[in-house]
Image 1: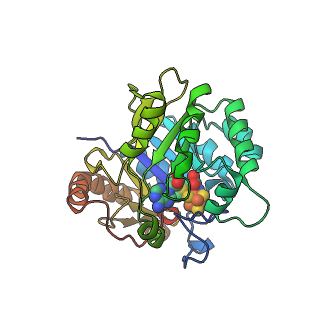
Image 2: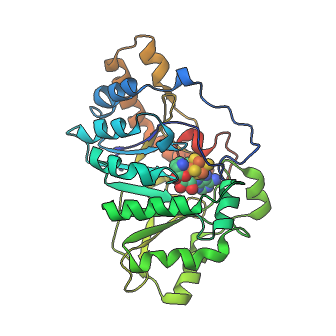
Length: 328
Ligand code: SAM
Ligand code: SF4
């Protein structure tokens, strides 16, 4: 049985981008009210007195866009300093990274995943819903800065959308050749923008691998990280290519994670709402952390069953929440 020791923490549900596949312009999103966000102090209490005691040791900060959360550097420092923390990472769109990367590194962050869906500024801006001055260069600058500072591993997340950025698969894969950058292709899921998903469809990982294999060859890299990626390598490349195939290949049975939303809901599964716990309301109404620990422990016990149920129902259903709301 998988040990569930990995918590994805959403620091905020808002974002400075409007990615087509996540929270497109015009979508009707209900944001968490400021007063309902977990405060830094509440988050620290939950980690120290609930999550760490029940066995969580690996944490990822995500969102929405985690870098727009005030105090994010302090949050990183606090989590990095817990003696039990074995791993701390962040997923970001990197728009604000250039100026923040050194502070984040100094606070103890070493691993970073950056979303980069295109190398063409025009396509990039189309994907992120930007109509003003191109934002590509600033994101690219953030990636270069993080690399120079020494973030390692540095992973680049790509969601491939047919007709939008699928013509760039080889160019994006090539980023793994000369530098130790790890490019990860994530299958597009019908979360966030079901219409786009229905219009454009999605591309499975094996189709992407075939394109890459035809161009350079592809060997299996003998790596298994925290996550669900299948990892390969272009022969001779410094970095790797990961494939996250949650649409074509259900990996619920190896799921090792839970998610804490920005408003303090603990969710055992990305794809359904079984068993979720409202930790913030309980904490604020005086429920003891001992009682919350008990609830989280029980939920951990239920996780294999939840994984099994999700595995039976598959991954192609309709979901009410976006990745930015759940903390993708
Ligand atoms: N804003 C940060 C970012 O974009 O890296 C962190 C949050 S974002 C919700 C986390 C990841 O979810 C990103 O890599 C993004 O590409 C992915 N994501 C969002 N919506 C998705 C969808 N419909 N299908 C697949 N991946 C999605
Ligand atoms: Fe924002 Fe990340 Fe969602 Fe894009 S994928 S809209 S950057 S939260």
